[in-house]
Image (tube, helix red, strand yellow):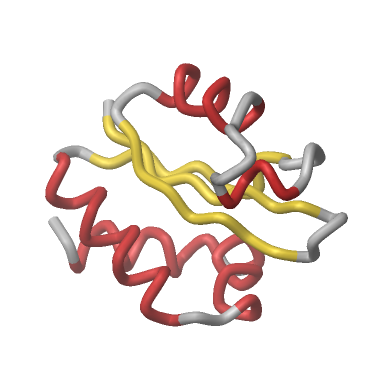
Length: 93
């Protein structure tokens, strides 16, 4: 299954948006990130949102859409208003 995920760091007050086909392995990568990787800047990354996608293309398109918004408010609204996620999945079907 393909997954778009958003991590949040309280220390950095930042979000990280990613895409993977193997979520558990990817989370381990972030927990043990090398010092030159963005997620190595904090050790308190928590899963904020996880969106299951039907295809790789759909997942990559949703990830790109969220990143293009460049907005913490938009990301927080994805949790606040689950209908946004539903509409994204429909749009990029």
